[in-house]
Length: 362
Ligand code: G6P
View (spheres, rainbow, N blue to C red):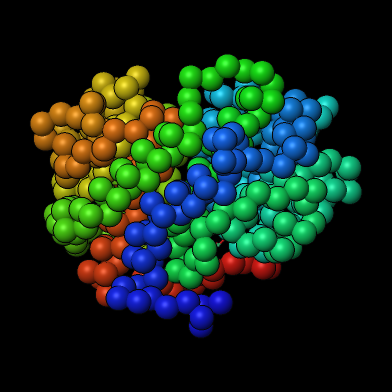
Protein backbone atom coordinates (compact mmCIF):
# COMPACT_ATOMS: atom_id res chain seq x y z
CA UNK A 1 0.00 0.00 0.00
CA UNK A 2 1.01 3.62 -0.53
CA UNK A 3 2.26 3.91 3.04
CA UNK A 4 4.96 1.30 2.49
CA UNK A 5 6.17 2.54 -0.89
CA UNK A 6 8.62 5.41 -0.92
CA UNK A 7 9.06 8.06 -3.56
CA UNK A 8 12.79 8.11 -2.89
CA UNK A 9 14.33 11.10 -4.63
CA UNK A 10 11.28 11.60 -6.83
CA UNK A 11 8.89 14.53 -6.29
CA UNK A 12 5.93 12.40 -7.38
CA UNK A 13 5.01 8.75 -7.68
CA UNK A 14 3.94 9.33 -11.25
CA UNK A 15 7.43 10.38 -12.35
CA UNK A 16 8.95 7.45 -10.48
CA UNK A 17 6.52 5.06 -12.13
CA UNK A 18 7.22 6.50 -15.60
CA UNK A 19 10.92 5.92 -14.98
CA UNK A 20 10.32 2.36 -13.78
CA UNK A 21 8.89 1.26 -17.12
CA UNK A 22 12.12 -0.10 -18.67
CA UNK A 23 12.66 -2.21 -15.54
CA UNK A 24 9.09 -3.48 -15.61
CA UNK A 25 9.50 -4.57 -19.23
CA UNK A 26 12.72 -6.43 -18.31
CA UNK A 27 10.97 -8.02 -15.33
CA UNK A 28 8.16 -9.23 -17.61
CA UNK A 29 10.72 -10.69 -20.02
CA UNK A 30 12.27 -12.63 -17.13
CA UNK A 31 8.98 -13.79 -15.66
CA UNK A 32 7.54 -15.02 -18.95
CA UNK A 33 10.64 -16.80 -20.27
CA UNK A 34 12.14 -20.20 -19.40
CA UNK A 35 15.91 -20.73 -19.18
CA UNK A 36 15.76 -22.09 -22.73
CA UNK A 37 14.27 -18.84 -24.03
CA UNK A 38 10.86 -20.43 -24.46
CA UNK A 39 7.69 -18.55 -23.51
CA UNK A 40 6.46 -19.57 -20.07
CA UNK A 41 2.68 -19.38 -19.93
CA UNK A 42 0.18 -21.58 -18.16
CA UNK A 43 -0.75 -24.42 -20.57
CA UNK A 44 -4.41 -23.96 -19.61
CA UNK A 45 -4.32 -20.36 -20.87
CA UNK A 46 -2.82 -21.58 -24.13
CA UNK A 47 -5.59 -24.10 -24.54
CA UNK A 48 -8.29 -21.56 -23.74
CA UNK A 49 -6.91 -19.04 -26.22
CA UNK A 50 -6.50 -21.67 -28.93
CA UNK A 51 -10.02 -23.01 -28.39
CA UNK A 52 -11.65 -19.60 -28.71
CA UNK A 53 -13.16 -18.34 -31.95
CA UNK A 54 -13.38 -14.76 -30.66
CA UNK A 55 -11.76 -12.90 -27.79
CA UNK A 56 -13.73 -10.25 -25.87
CA UNK A 57 -11.47 -7.81 -24.07
CA UNK A 58 -13.26 -6.00 -21.25
CA UNK A 59 -11.69 -3.06 -19.42
CA UNK A 60 -12.03 0.54 -18.26
CA UNK A 61 -9.94 3.70 -18.56
CA UNK A 62 -6.28 3.21 -19.36
CA UNK A 63 -6.68 -0.57 -19.34
CA UNK A 64 -9.24 -0.21 -22.13
CA UNK A 65 -6.64 1.68 -24.15
CA UNK A 66 -4.16 -1.14 -23.59
CA UNK A 67 -6.86 -3.52 -24.80
CA UNK A 68 -7.14 -1.64 -28.10
CA UNK A 69 -3.45 -2.28 -28.70
CA UNK A 70 -3.79 -5.89 -27.54
CA UNK A 71 -6.49 -6.50 -30.13
CA UNK A 72 -3.98 -5.70 -32.86
CA UNK A 73 -1.45 -8.19 -31.45
CA UNK A 74 -3.95 -11.03 -31.13
CA UNK A 75 -5.49 -10.44 -34.55
CA UNK A 76 -2.21 -9.86 -36.41
CA UNK A 77 -0.11 -12.52 -34.68
CA UNK A 78 -2.56 -15.19 -33.53
CA UNK A 79 -5.28 -14.67 -36.15
CA UNK A 80 -8.21 -14.68 -33.71
CA UNK A 81 -10.83 -11.92 -34.04
CA UNK A 82 -10.97 -9.62 -31.02
CA UNK A 83 -13.54 -7.15 -29.75
CA UNK A 84 -12.59 -4.57 -27.15
CA UNK A 85 -15.35 -3.26 -24.91
CA UNK A 86 -15.71 -0.65 -22.22
CA UNK A 87 -16.89 -2.64 -19.22
CA UNK A 88 -19.68 -0.27 -18.17
CA UNK A 89 -21.14 -0.36 -21.69
CA UNK A 90 -20.86 -4.10 -22.20
CA UNK A 91 -22.92 -4.79 -19.07
CA UNK A 92 -26.01 -3.11 -20.42
CA UNK A 93 -25.61 -3.54 -24.16
CA UNK A 94 -24.07 -6.94 -24.74
CA UNK A 95 -23.15 -7.71 -28.36
CA UNK A 96 -24.06 -10.97 -30.02
CA UNK A 97 -21.43 -13.43 -28.81
CA UNK A 98 -19.59 -15.99 -30.92
CA UNK A 99 -19.89 -19.74 -30.29
CA UNK A 100 -16.73 -20.05 -28.22
CA UNK A 101 -15.95 -16.69 -26.66
CA UNK A 102 -13.05 -16.17 -24.27
CA UNK A 103 -13.26 -13.12 -22.05
CA UNK A 104 -10.06 -11.26 -21.22
CA UNK A 105 -10.36 -8.76 -18.37
CA UNK A 106 -7.60 -6.18 -18.24
CA UNK A 107 -7.39 -4.39 -14.92
CA UNK A 108 -4.43 -2.89 -13.10
CA UNK A 109 -6.17 -3.17 -9.72
CA UNK A 110 -8.32 -6.19 -10.41
CA UNK A 111 -11.05 -4.44 -8.45
CA UNK A 112 -12.94 -2.28 -10.96
CA UNK A 113 -16.65 -2.80 -10.28
CA UNK A 114 -17.70 -2.20 -13.90
CA UNK A 115 -15.43 -5.01 -15.07
CA UNK A 116 -16.48 -7.29 -12.25
CA UNK A 117 -20.14 -6.87 -13.20
CA UNK A 118 -19.32 -8.24 -16.65
CA UNK A 119 -17.28 -11.08 -15.19
CA UNK A 120 -20.17 -12.14 -12.94
CA UNK A 121 -22.56 -12.05 -15.89
CA UNK A 122 -20.42 -14.04 -18.32
CA UNK A 123 -19.55 -16.64 -15.67
CA UNK A 124 -23.29 -17.15 -15.16
CA UNK A 125 -23.50 -17.73 -18.90
CA UNK A 126 -20.73 -20.34 -18.56
CA UNK A 127 -17.99 -18.61 -20.54
CA UNK A 128 -14.27 -18.83 -19.67
CA UNK A 129 -12.38 -15.78 -18.39
CA UNK A 130 -8.77 -14.70 -18.15
CA UNK A 131 -7.75 -11.72 -16.03
CA UNK A 132 -4.62 -9.70 -16.74
CA UNK A 133 -3.84 -7.75 -13.58
CA UNK A 134 -1.16 -6.15 -11.50
CA UNK A 135 -2.68 -7.51 -8.29
CA UNK A 136 -2.61 -11.29 -7.97
CA UNK A 137 -5.36 -12.36 -5.60
CA UNK A 138 -7.57 -9.38 -6.54
CA UNK A 139 -11.28 -9.95 -7.07
CA UNK A 140 -11.06 -10.19 -10.87
CA UNK A 141 -8.14 -12.57 -10.57
CA UNK A 142 -9.86 -14.84 -8.05
CA UNK A 143 -13.14 -14.99 -9.91
CA UNK A 144 -11.71 -15.63 -13.38
CA UNK A 145 -10.51 -19.06 -14.53
CA UNK A 146 -7.00 -17.86 -15.35
CA UNK A 147 -4.70 -14.97 -14.44
CA UNK A 148 -1.69 -13.36 -16.05
CA UNK A 149 0.32 -11.08 -13.78
CA UNK A 150 1.75 -7.76 -14.88
CA UNK A 151 4.72 -7.70 -12.46
CA UNK A 152 4.72 -3.89 -12.60
CA UNK A 153 5.04 -3.47 -8.83
CA UNK A 154 2.57 -1.28 -6.91
CA UNK A 155 1.31 1.67 -8.91
CA UNK A 156 0.47 4.52 -6.54
CA UNK A 157 -0.18 7.55 -8.78
CA UNK A 158 -3.83 7.67 -9.81
CA UNK A 159 -2.87 8.22 -13.46
CA UNK A 160 -1.74 4.83 -14.72
CA UNK A 161 1.59 4.64 -16.54
CA UNK A 162 3.69 1.54 -15.94
CA UNK A 163 0.60 -0.68 -15.69
CA UNK A 164 -0.42 0.40 -19.22
CA UNK A 165 2.94 -0.52 -20.74
CA UNK A 166 3.05 -3.75 -18.71
CA UNK A 167 -0.42 -4.68 -20.00
CA UNK A 168 0.70 -4.13 -23.59
CA UNK A 169 3.88 -6.16 -23.10
CA UNK A 170 1.98 -9.08 -21.55
CA UNK A 171 -0.64 -8.93 -24.32
CA UNK A 172 2.16 -9.19 -26.90
CA UNK A 173 3.54 -12.26 -25.15
CA UNK A 174 0.06 -13.78 -24.90
CA UNK A 175 -0.53 -13.20 -28.61
CA UNK A 176 2.76 -14.84 -29.60
CA UNK A 177 2.14 -17.76 -27.25
CA UNK A 178 -1.26 -18.28 -28.84
CA UNK A 179 0.22 -18.09 -32.33
CA UNK A 180 2.75 -20.76 -31.35
CA UNK A 181 -0.04 -22.93 -29.94
CA UNK A 182 -1.83 -22.62 -33.26
CA UNK A 183 1.32 -23.50 -35.19
CA UNK A 184 1.57 -20.09 -36.85
CA UNK A 185 5.13 -19.26 -37.96
CA UNK A 186 6.09 -15.77 -36.83
CA UNK A 187 8.94 -13.57 -37.83
CA UNK A 188 8.77 -11.85 -34.45
CA UNK A 189 10.71 -12.70 -31.29
CA UNK A 190 8.75 -10.93 -28.55
CA UNK A 191 11.44 -11.12 -25.87
CA UNK A 192 14.15 -9.78 -28.14
CA UNK A 193 11.86 -6.98 -29.35
CA UNK A 194 10.76 -6.13 -25.79
CA UNK A 195 14.39 -5.87 -24.71
CA UNK A 196 14.90 -3.29 -27.47
CA UNK A 197 11.78 -1.50 -26.22
CA UNK A 198 13.15 -1.34 -22.66
CA UNK A 199 16.32 0.35 -23.93
CA UNK A 200 14.28 2.77 -26.05
CA UNK A 201 12.14 3.69 -23.03
CA UNK A 202 15.29 4.46 -21.09
CA UNK A 203 16.54 6.77 -23.83
CA UNK A 204 13.21 8.64 -23.61
CA UNK A 205 13.07 8.89 -19.83
CA UNK A 206 16.55 10.46 -20.11
CA UNK A 207 15.09 13.23 -22.29
CA UNK A 208 12.96 14.86 -19.60
CA UNK A 209 14.42 18.31 -20.19
CA UNK A 210 13.51 18.21 -23.87
CA UNK A 211 9.98 17.08 -23.08
CA UNK A 212 9.56 19.68 -20.35
CA UNK A 213 10.65 22.28 -22.90
CA UNK A 214 8.08 20.98 -25.40
CA UNK A 215 5.42 21.16 -22.71
CA UNK A 216 6.25 24.81 -22.14
CA UNK A 217 6.16 25.51 -25.87
CA UNK A 218 2.88 23.74 -26.62
CA UNK A 219 0.82 23.32 -23.46
CA UNK A 220 1.78 26.16 -21.11
CA UNK A 221 -1.34 28.30 -21.34
CA UNK A 222 -3.77 26.34 -23.47
CA UNK A 223 -7.22 25.23 -22.36
CA UNK A 224 -7.44 22.43 -24.89
CA UNK A 225 -5.26 20.09 -26.92
CA UNK A 226 -5.64 17.45 -29.61
CA UNK A 227 -3.68 14.27 -30.16
CA UNK A 228 -3.86 12.79 -33.62
CA UNK A 229 -2.62 9.53 -35.03
CA UNK A 230 -3.64 6.76 -37.36
CA UNK A 231 -3.72 3.02 -36.82
CA UNK A 232 -1.98 2.03 -33.60
CA UNK A 233 -0.89 5.65 -33.05
CA UNK A 234 -4.55 6.60 -32.74
CA UNK A 235 -4.94 4.29 -29.75
CA UNK A 236 -1.87 5.77 -28.09
CA UNK A 237 -3.31 9.24 -28.75
CA UNK A 238 -6.41 8.25 -26.80
CA UNK A 239 -4.20 7.28 -23.88
CA UNK A 240 -2.03 10.41 -24.19
CA UNK A 241 -5.09 12.63 -24.11
CA UNK A 242 -6.54 10.75 -21.13
CA UNK A 243 -3.28 11.31 -19.21
CA UNK A 244 -3.36 15.03 -19.98
CA UNK A 245 -7.02 15.37 -18.97
CA UNK A 246 -6.63 13.39 -15.79
CA UNK A 247 -3.80 15.32 -14.22
CA UNK A 248 -3.58 18.76 -15.89
CA UNK A 249 -7.34 19.30 -16.49
CA UNK A 250 -6.60 20.50 -20.02
CA UNK A 251 -9.51 19.45 -22.21
CA UNK A 252 -7.89 16.96 -24.57
CA UNK A 253 -9.04 14.51 -27.20
CA UNK A 254 -7.32 11.76 -29.12
CA UNK A 255 -8.51 11.55 -32.72
CA UNK A 256 -7.97 9.36 -35.73
CA UNK A 257 -6.09 11.64 -38.14
CA UNK A 258 -8.35 10.92 -41.08
CA UNK A 259 -11.52 11.58 -39.08
CA UNK A 260 -10.58 15.16 -38.12
CA UNK A 261 -11.95 16.62 -41.34
CA UNK A 262 -15.35 15.07 -40.59
CA UNK A 263 -16.03 17.47 -37.76
CA UNK A 264 -13.39 18.04 -35.16
CA UNK A 265 -11.22 20.25 -37.37
CA UNK A 266 -13.86 22.94 -36.74
CA UNK A 267 -12.31 23.34 -33.28
CA UNK A 268 -8.85 24.24 -34.57
CA UNK A 269 -8.01 27.90 -33.96
CA UNK A 270 -4.89 30.03 -33.92
CA UNK A 271 -2.39 28.29 -31.59
CA UNK A 272 -4.50 25.23 -30.74
CA UNK A 273 -1.95 22.58 -29.75
CA UNK A 274 -2.02 19.43 -31.87
CA UNK A 275 0.32 16.59 -30.99
CA UNK A 276 0.73 14.04 -33.77
CA UNK A 277 2.28 10.59 -33.59
CA UNK A 278 4.00 9.15 -36.65
CA UNK A 279 5.40 5.71 -35.86
CA UNK A 280 3.79 3.62 -38.61
CA UNK A 281 5.30 3.51 -42.09
CA UNK A 282 2.01 2.89 -43.90
CA UNK A 283 0.38 6.04 -42.52
CA UNK A 284 3.43 8.28 -42.23
CA UNK A 285 2.47 10.24 -45.31
CA UNK A 286 -1.22 10.56 -44.46
CA UNK A 287 -0.77 11.64 -40.84
CA UNK A 288 1.66 14.30 -42.01
CA UNK A 289 -0.90 15.63 -44.43
CA UNK A 290 -3.42 15.76 -41.55
CA UNK A 291 -0.88 17.86 -39.67
CA UNK A 292 -0.67 20.19 -42.67
CA UNK A 293 -4.46 20.53 -42.60
CA UNK A 294 -4.45 21.72 -38.99
CA UNK A 295 -1.34 23.89 -39.37
CA UNK A 296 -2.96 25.74 -42.27
CA UNK A 297 -5.80 26.57 -39.86
CA UNK A 298 -3.40 27.99 -37.30
CA UNK A 299 -2.66 24.98 -35.09
CA UNK A 300 0.53 24.83 -33.07
CA UNK A 301 1.44 21.29 -34.14
CA UNK A 302 4.25 19.01 -33.03
CA UNK A 303 5.14 15.68 -34.54
CA UNK A 304 6.60 12.81 -32.54
CA UNK A 305 7.94 10.31 -35.05
CA UNK A 306 9.85 7.06 -35.09
CA UNK A 307 13.47 6.82 -36.19
CA UNK A 308 13.46 5.94 -39.88
CA UNK A 309 10.24 7.87 -40.52
CA UNK A 310 11.36 11.23 -39.18
CA UNK A 311 11.47 14.52 -41.03
CA UNK A 312 13.47 17.65 -40.32
CA UNK A 313 11.06 19.60 -38.16
CA UNK A 314 9.81 16.77 -35.96
CA UNK A 315 9.75 17.78 -32.29
CA UNK A 316 10.95 14.41 -31.02
CA UNK A 317 12.26 11.28 -32.71
CA UNK A 318 11.65 8.01 -30.87
CA UNK A 319 14.32 5.30 -31.00
CA UNK A 320 13.41 2.59 -33.49
CA UNK A 321 11.48 -0.42 -32.18
CA UNK A 322 9.41 -3.12 -33.90
CA UNK A 323 6.41 -1.54 -35.56
CA UNK A 324 3.94 -3.59 -33.51
CA UNK A 325 5.45 -2.42 -30.24
CA UNK A 326 5.62 1.33 -30.88
CA UNK A 327 2.84 2.12 -28.33
CA UNK A 328 5.25 1.07 -25.58
CA UNK A 329 7.64 3.87 -26.51
CA UNK A 330 5.40 6.53 -28.03
CA UNK A 331 3.34 6.70 -24.85
CA UNK A 332 6.37 7.65 -22.73
CA UNK A 333 6.75 11.24 -24.02
CA UNK A 334 2.96 11.66 -23.80
CA UNK A 335 3.04 10.58 -20.14
CA UNK A 336 5.84 13.08 -19.54
CA UNK A 337 4.02 15.87 -21.39
CA UNK A 338 1.01 15.31 -19.12
CA UNK A 339 3.24 15.23 -16.07
CA UNK A 340 4.98 18.52 -16.85
CA UNK A 341 1.74 20.21 -17.91
CA UNK A 342 0.23 19.28 -14.54
CA UNK A 343 3.34 20.44 -12.75
CA UNK A 344 3.30 23.83 -14.47
CA UNK A 345 -0.32 24.29 -13.51
CA UNK A 346 0.48 23.32 -9.95
CA UNK A 347 -1.99 20.47 -10.04
CA UNK A 348 -1.85 17.59 -7.61
CA UNK A 349 -0.07 15.19 -9.96
CA UNK A 350 -0.49 11.98 -7.96
CA UNK A 351 -4.00 12.67 -6.67
CA UNK A 352 -6.03 14.52 -9.29
CA UNK A 353 -9.39 15.93 -8.33
CA UNK A 354 -12.49 13.74 -8.69
CA UNK A 355 -10.53 10.59 -9.53
CA UNK A 356 -9.84 7.40 -7.60
CA UNK A 357 -7.09 4.86 -8.23
CA UNK A 358 -9.62 2.11 -8.41
CA UNK A 359 -13.35 2.54 -8.77
CA UNK A 360 -15.16 -0.13 -6.83
CA UNK A 361 -18.67 1.18 -7.40
CA UNK A 362 -20.63 0.74 -10.64
C1 G6P B 1 -9.79 4.28 -12.53
C2 G6P B 1 -8.38 4.85 -12.60
C3 G6P B 1 -7.83 4.71 -14.01
C4 G6P B 1 -7.90 3.27 -14.46
C5 G6P B 1 -9.34 2.73 -14.38
C6 G6P B 1 -9.38 1.23 -14.59
O1 G6P B 1 -10.67 5.10 -13.21
O2 G6P B 1 -8.39 6.21 -12.20
O3 G6P B 1 -6.47 5.13 -14.02
O4 G6P B 1 -7.42 3.16 -15.77
O5 G6P B 1 -9.86 2.97 -13.07
O6 G6P B 1 -8.70 0.62 -13.54
P1 G6P B 1 -8.19 -0.85 -13.56
O7 G6P B 1 -7.59 -1.07 -12.18
O8 G6P B 1 -9.38 -1.74 -13.79
O9 G6P B 1 -7.19 -0.98 -14.64
